[in-house]
Structures are given as structure tokens and as C-alpha cells.
Amino acid sequence: MLSKKWNVPILFLNTAWAAADSENYRDGAMGKDAYNMYVGKNWPNRQPYTNLKNTLRYFHSWLGIRAVLWAHGENDAQHGVTENSYFENIKTLIDKSRNDAGFIAPWILARSSAGEAYPKPYPPIIQAQNRMFKIKNYAVYRGPDLDTVQMPRPKHGHFENISGGIQGLTLAAQSWNRMLTDSLLETMGSLQAKYTIHTGVVPSKVKPGVPFFLPFHLNGISSGTIPLQAELLNEHHEFVDTVGKGNLSPMRILIPETIKTGKYTIRITSSQPIIPGSVSTTMDVITLADGHQYINHIEARKMDTYVQVSWLMSVYPSLKKMTLQKTMDGIAYTDVATFEPVQNAFNSRIYTFTDANDNNPTRFYRLKTEDVEGQASFSPIATVFEANSLPPFIAFPNPVSDQLFYLRSETEQPILDCRLYNIYGKEHPISTNSNEMSGAIAVRPTTFLPSGLYILLIKTPTGSTSQTIVFK
Image 1 (tube, helix red, strand yellow):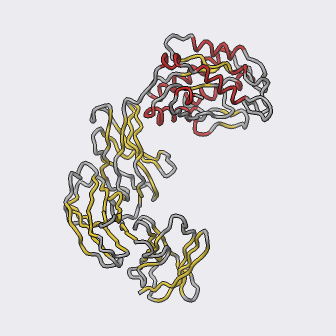
Image 2 (spheres, rainbow, N blue to C red; image 1 turned 90 degrees about the vertical axis):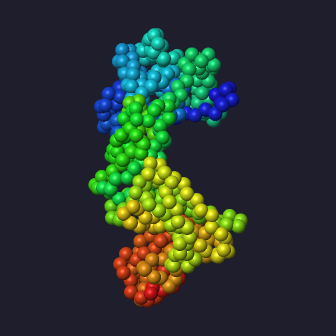
Image 3 (cartoon, rainbow, N blue to C red; image 1 turned 180 degrees about the horizontal axis):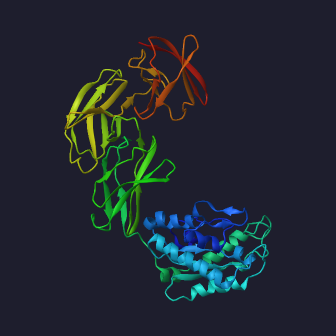
């Protein structure tokens, strides 16, 4: 309705939390655990307030916001909450949410108190809501009268579009649509993000306990004027630890040695003013790693008459030179070109190289990096597979040297299970890694295997295949 009326896209972020009363919201806002009377225990994670706080703080701070739309009161009405209690609870909620968000978001309150358990307007709640509108310069506005919609309510107490009956959800939406007028929006104005932080490029692999540097870009305010911190997030986007502080880019980052091996991201944030930065790409934190893999990503792409190799290098202050290497058989690499770093001490950088297309059906590229102390490391491998050059799931190189072979992967047919047996049927455990070579999976036995014949069994969603592997 709103999109059609204003001819623009409309984004709603839902922070609702079922069965929560105003006291629950107040307690969460004040840093207390809120008690859920229906199940006899506290809400988890300071809910229901946390949903509202996080949405305002981590989304609307950079998305902007028109208003918080609030339809609430039925739960309090059925339990006889007084006018003053409801008023103080909701006012505390609004005040604390604005403080935690770092900006004053307008609120639009529906007049709402009736439900299935209390099937008529409850004056104390309505009067408390009306008092909010009378506070001068408080930016809380009158919403629709939802006590007039779909009464009596269905047994579950919520609006519902009943087949052949009252269309409660539609009627409630129409009530909101009528109240959200052009004049109201003009009165409220809109909040746009004043500041943003773009978190830069991280290494693809990180060893805990060894520092590295992370660039960032700050918009709307001069760099070096506000305190910033780097937050480490796990693969579930949960906060783990603060791993860096400062106000200039690049920021020194140190992943504690106590952090477990896994996939993590980093977000640069500010608390004064409140600015949640963007989240970095994923990095692998590996406790047993030899060091950092500063190359965030490398790829090789076949064009009509050439192959373009590109790589994204994170900040690498001690980088001395880079050497692009190529092989056709996956074993013997030769140098193709050498590069010096370009302003890589303080910023990330994209490098590219154009290689002649020699019509070889399969090509492998890697980057050798050397630092000022002469230490060398190698990037993951970028591959170019011609059509039908190498079928998926066929091991290469075969025979196997150095206890390592690869399987060309296929996104539409992922490998569900992969097992290695000797000719007598004994299984030998293996480990797999999809980060070492683009478009392929690296396979290693977990213990050294002597020379001989082995059987590799692969299961996919469509069936199983087996092949003989020769270990030299």
C-alpha cells in the first residue's frame, strides 16, 4: 500500500517479540533480564529489547529511518497494568533506545489495548498512549486506532485474514496506511546516516598471536578524530573479542592466541558517535598456520585470446616482491612475471597480469611472495579449466607425489563423502580443503601413505564413483 502510494520501495525491519509486555521491554532496556510469565523463566539475551536495540544500532544507523511503528498494549491490558506504569515503561523504552542508537528516531504509536482476552478498549493503556503524544518536542506521533479493527479477535489474539470472513490483517494495514500521510512524514522528517565506516581487506588466512594491519575508510568525519575499535565476529556473526583500537588507517590487529581455529570476520566500529562499520570478508584463523596469507583472493579467467590473472593483496608492509608462476601439470611451476608492491604498506591493492593463451586445456597459477627478510610464501592456486579438459571428481595429478592430490569440484553436484582405501579394503583417513585451489578440492591423507595402489570412493547427491589412485 505504502509503496504504491509513494511510488518508492519501502523497507520494514521487524523487531517484534511475541508475548512481551511493557515491563519486559523496560527491564531489557535497563540492562535486566526480563521475566516471561508464560513459561516461567527469563527471556534470553535481554530480549525483547535487544531486537529493537540491535536493529536501530546496526542497521538504521547506516540505512537511515523514517520511524519506529509501535503497535502494543493488549498484553498489558489483559493483566490490568495501570496507566502510569505503562506510560513510564514505554517512555523508558523510547528514551533508552534513542540513547543506545545514538540518534532520535521518531516513534508512531498505535492506540492498541483490546484483544481476545480483553475484547474492548482498556482506558488506562489508551490514556498512557495519548499522554505520549502530548509531550512537547518528543517526536512521538499518533498512530491508527487498532482497537476498532477485527473485534472480537480470533482465539490466538492476533489480526487474521479469515477465509470468507473479516480480513483483519488487511484492515490493520489499511489503518496504518491512512495514518501515514504526506503531512505526517513531512513533520517527522527522515534520518539519514551522517557517518559510515567501510572495513577494508583482511588476509585470507591468519595465525593467532601475530599482528597484521587492516585498512578502513571513514565517511562524514575526518579520520583520526574519533576512537575506533575492531570487533572479531565468529561464523555466526556473534561478537568474540576486540582485536584492535585506534583512530588511523590501517589499524593494527592482533587475534589472541586463545582464539580457536575457525572462520571469522572483522568489523570496525565507533561508539562515540555510534557507527557500526561494514563487515570484512571471511578469514580463516588457523592456530597451526606458519603465518598469514596476505593474498585475500586470486583468480584466473580465460578471455578470447588471453588469460587474465588477478589478485587482491591485503596490507603487507614488509612485502618486497611478487612472482607469478604457472604450471600445466600441477607439479612443475615456472616463473611468468615479477612485480614490485604498489603502495601496499598502508592499503590493499588489486594487481592484474595478462598471460598469452597457449591453448593448453588446463593451467594453474600461483603467486610467490617474498618479504624484506627473504621469507617466501605461496598463494592459493588459481585454475583455468577448458571445457571438457578435466571431468569433475577425477583426481590429479595421478600418480600422486608429495601426499597431495586434487579433485575438480562442481557446484551443482557437491561431494557429500570422500573416502580412501588400500587394495585390501582398509580405510585411510583424509582431510579436504577447498581454499587451496579455485575450482578444486585439495585432498591429503592424515598420515603418510607408502607407495602403492589406493581406491578413492566419492559420493554425490546423484550416486557414487570410485577410481584408482597411485601414490609414488
